Image (cartoon, rainbow, N blue to C red; front, top):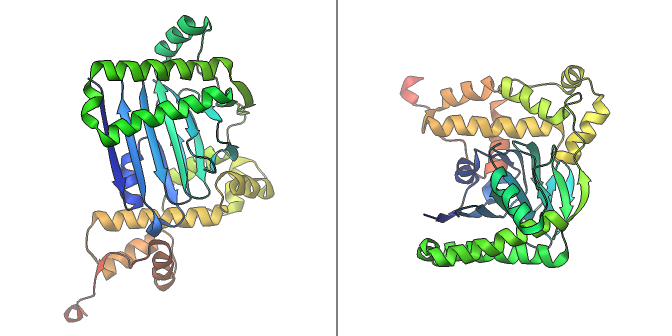
Length: 316
């Protein structure tokens, strides 16, 4: 039976918890973040629609058992993949199991449609006579204007149905008609769209930022110097800094610092109410050398003090 749901988030932590399987997200100003996420599982498609209020960057990791198409859903939404901007009306056809950076520069609305490889192949052959498969690397595509407008309109209709009248998503005829139209339009976009850009990655030269992310994941509490990163990756500092600016929208140092702030926050929230001494130990363990500067930066980013119990005077 088709299912769906819609949630409103008033903080980045809750949104991240929902999206963590596919998007490891870093919000630049989390204290001003809010979002809405709407999804529906149809017999042959999975649709998702996101509306986010703040700029952020995220490492997207897509499951290999489905083929994803993503696109901005509002004119002026700045949605970038590895530094390439999708214009309103463009779509991104992802490779299976693709890992890439998705970034926004302001409030953004975007959507995804997921279909199994077998279903895409079958519908492509039936509707167009073409064998549609996932590309080896992601492709930025520009469908015919009528097709892209219809894709956005049908996707919005499914999500409005979930948000306003969830019971109707269980009506077989309603779902069948909506999914039929959505599949036809999706196939037209992929079969007749123009490829604007092919990904340039190769197994011989892996993406340096994915390698950078692997280094951070391996040593989450370590401050990595740009020189040692570049020596490890075999890339010049100027090229690496330019790549970080384009793809992440941040310098390597600033990205790491915000990431470690996020990790400290997550650890402190898990402990619920740590003592000031415990907080200081955690802060220093993650490479912050000044507790006072950490608190100042934490306040500037999150708009609140770090979660901790005041020091007990009797214990001093």
